[in-house]
Each structure stands twice: as C-alpha cells, then as structure tokens.
Image (cartoon, rainbow, N blue to C red; front, side, top):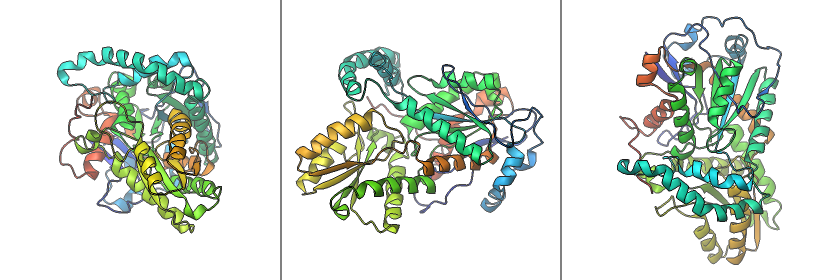
Length: 462
C-alpha cells in the first residue's frame, strides 16, 4: 500500500488558506533493496557534483522500514534531526537533486522551435478532446506567427535567454551549499521546453546510478501550467521505465512560505528601496506571471492563493524591518483570447500613474531567475509604460539568482525532504495503475483545497 505524507515545513499561518510549502512523497509500506532515489541531468552538460566528508558508498543501504512507517502524529514526523538524516539517508546512498525550470531559447534561431514546444503543451493551450489532434498544427501556426516579435525581444536582451546559464549556476551553488551541510549530492537541471530537456536529465540520472532523488521545481508557487506541467511530464517518463518505477524520490511542489526565501526577497526589496529619493513613499509593485482565470476557478489551481499569501509574508517581513510601504499585486505575460488573472500589470501601472503614484518598485515575484519576462517585459516595456503614465521614479528588484540566503534555504528544503523519499511503487503493476510523481501534487492540492475527490478536469482555455 502506498502513502503520501507531508514532510516538515513552516507551519501555515492560516489553516483556512492553501499551503503547499511542505514536501510530499509517495511512500511505500515496505522499503528494501537498492530502490533509492535517482536524479538526472542533460546529457549535453556535465552533472554537478561534489565530494563531501560523508562521501558515497557502494554498500547497500540499511533497512529503512522503521523510518517509512506511518506516523501517529505531526510531532512524531519531525523528530529526526539533521544528524540522523545524514546518518540514515546519506552515507550509503547517492543523492541527486533535479531542478525543474521552463527553459528558454539560447539563440535567435532557437526562438521558433522553443515556442512550438511551449504551445504544443496541453497545459498551456487546452483544446477540446475532439480537437486535440490539432495541438501540434496549432502550435506550429502560433509559434511561426509569434516568432518575429519574440525574436525582437530576445535580440534586445542579448540574442537569447540567460535562463540556462543562471539555472546551472544555481545548481552549482546548491550543490556547494549541500556539501557544506555534509550532504554529498549531484545536482541536475531539467527544462520543460528547451535544452537541457527533462528527458535528457532523466537519462543522466540513470547513467549516474543515483539512489535518492529530490525533485525541486524552481517555481516558488505551484501552478498547473508550471510545476504541474513538469511533474506530469515526469509522470509519463517514470511510468514507462522499469528503473524509474522503483526509484526512490520525493517532490517539493512549492516552497513560497520558507523563511529563507521570504527573508531573501525582503532583503533585495529593502536594498532597492533605499535607492529612491524618498524610500518611504515608494509603491512596491509585485508582478507575477499570469495564468488563465479558468485554471484557478475551474481547475482548482492554488497559484493565486499561494501568490497572495507569499506577498503577505514578504510585506510582514519588511514591516518587521520598519518598512511600511504600500504594495499591490498584478499579473503579467497574458496571451490568447481568454481571461487571465487580474489585475493585469500593464493596466495597473496606468491606474497607479493616474492615482498620482510617483515612485514604483517592480518586484518579479514568481521568478527566481532573470529571463525575457524580467529583462524585456518588465525592464523595457513596463518601465516605458510607467514613465509615460506619470511615474517619475522607477526601480526593479533583481531576481534571486544565487543569493546566498535563498540558496542555503533551498539546501535546507532538500535536506528536510530526505526522510520522506520513497519508491514510486512496490511493483510495476501498482505503478502503472495507481501512482505517479504528479499524484503528490494533485493529492496535496486536494487536501489543502478541501476537495474530497481529485482535482477537477482541466478545462479548455484556448
């Protein structure tokens, strides 16, 4: 029998609100053999790895049945100290961390095929069942039509997206942080729509013989269209591979409530505020990537609730530091004819100018890396719009990147998840019938949204 259990994380501030900042793992009632964690990385890039004091051992792991038994209480579930984690889950295992991200074109020639991969994803453009055979033709049409304008945007930021280089750097920094905490690990990068593809990462996983895998999407807040899409892809890959079916793993579906992340964001905002002539007069403008409204209202996507709580937590941290600036939240990057989450970033900027706001600090709240939405959409398009709307002073908080507090907190999240690593299933048959990586996320959404059944079917958005 399989169990899904939350790993320890920061306690929800309000139990009536959605909280997915904890870790979820499918846990088998029996654990043995070498069914461990496995993690992967692009075959075109060398995996990130380090040698820590504990090292890697070829000896089989000790019997861990007692550590995967059902817990009778929440307090019992958090009794294992970090030293015990290292002893029980590290010394005899090869640990890997799989960072999931969107991906981006590295050259202008990559733009159209990247857009095709993006729009061919049914989590991005949802067609009625009877018309799903048109998914790829439609993706081809849209990608060709949008490529010229998109190329202009990428040309303005240097001819390609820096996302891969930044994510690789984050992986290196995370590996070093884990090493400093006596957790020897290899860190891999799997992109959803461009190289290094998730499939390439998984192949490297298998070649490296990783025995424990922590899957960590680099999206602070969970959404069907971001973390959800990447996890569903992993689900399909895992179901078709004997090795992966028995691989021990855990998923951290979102982590927006983590103290380190909140403090790192507050520090960056505080630093930028003091660059303004009158810091106390600055409106803090959180701009998040939008999603179609139907994702939230009809498919149960927790993204909006997580985003709003994330903003609240950051503002509370700023208040502790003596900053009581006003703030607002809006959503950017909408495409297509359907309604997206409101308020829209562009409309909000115009409205703020009309209200007499003179100083605006943009905070890219849903991004931890610089890419086209920050470097071109915010820095160029929205800045120009703000100045045209009467805003005199403009600033923008940089994405977190490799900010030390942020990276250290991600390392802690990985360590805290290790006791909850479990096999995907106890048998091939079970795996193909009832369980998958994305069942973690779906199950957790169901719990925290008080659903009694699975998340509703996704609707047509295009």
